[in-house]
Image (tube, rainbow, N blue to C red; front, side, top):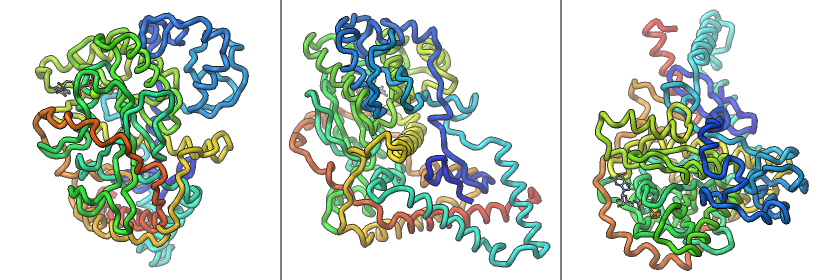
Length: 539
Ligand SMILES: Nc1nc2c(ncn2[C@@H]2O[C@H](COP(=O)(O)OP(=O)(O)OP(=O)(O)O)[C@@H](O)[C@H]2O)c(=O)[nH]1
Ligand SMILES: [Mg+2]
């Protein structure tokens, strides 16, 4: 029943009369380049010949392209683990471009949202697949009725065993040390709270922020576009629940790294930073709030170092799963926006463009505003995604895209490791041996199982995969009022010496069991659904 992806992970289990798990390949499948015209509108051009990434229109120093080509190749290849020394042989290459290295594979660039015209960008199962599933189920039932299969198969026992074997098998493809990368899979945005987000630090030096060992999502866009507010909104599920994501002019003048922590059973209690075994909560997704570009008030030097920090992060951060480019929904995209889009594209960073402050648009302005951004940036249908850091519009969709992108990035890294293109590096988090018992996770998951039963009782079309059942959760996305801004005062306080996460993984010793239980539950749910279809005479 469960299908494994080409890279071995058990993938999306999409329900809606869907009996078979489908690979969730959204980001790679949706690969699309921005239209050529849009790219060429970016000052400096697509290939970065004349532009630094965050400085649209600025001329690049010649020496960077000619005298030391290898320097930039090294930079650009970090993300893709490319050690080729052919740098400089080809002309017109972006110093940040991984795409121009011929001999090494690179992650496919994706602009999310291309999958289905008019439909959500994450739609993964077409009508044909659904029909096929229904046909398969039909055949299975006929076989049961005609006595061709054993009662145990009819009761789903064999299916369950196969499912378990599939899940277990694909889990085994991951080394225990890699499993920490999958922690986000159990994350449920429906119950996230601001206390789950912690600042790791602000970085403006030559080094990259410390690795959290988990996939990361970067927010970038013009200054004041709403990056921090949106990040806030992602983790603030109720009115007044605001994370400490900074806002003072130029506050985001460094790469501010946040960690979303694993969720504990008793939500909303700050003391739950500690697990029952005394260890600290581990991160499951990293969020980088990148410096806003186009911020006129910064001095030239500061601006340059800020841009360099962002550029370094984007070009080298191997765990970067998704870039979220924010544009103000009321404005026409400018050269900066296009240059950043082109640079991200060139670096092979999967990308979603979101139009912020959608609450400020009147209903009759929405369509035109979105079309203006789409045309201005050469985006595919379905983009930009409309979001509001005030009302929470688009936040659910963004979460889904983020989680999908995390999955894809983990798979890419895993493949790279398996093929010897990557040594694992910082994503290989050391597993704490004391966690072997898995008691903590038994405890956590006991409660979740019940929640799931409730969620899937209804007859609505449910589309979920790998625990993305939050799509249905009613508690999610409560409309909240605007954040006051007071909390920004404490933005930098006390965070300087933060060092909780880097070597604090806990692995998923019990993950096999949890996943097979989860899959078994889904199977049960599918059977109920199939029964209902049969009752209605649909199969
Ligand atoms: N109405 C409305 N206002 C918003 C929204 N998002 C942000 N704002 C406001 O826009 C201003 C800038 O928001 P920030 O989130 O600080 O923007 P930023 O992109 O992080 O800015 P920098 O860190 O300076 O780059 C603040 O006054 C926010 O309250 C939104 O969705 N709707
Ligand atoms: Mg900010």
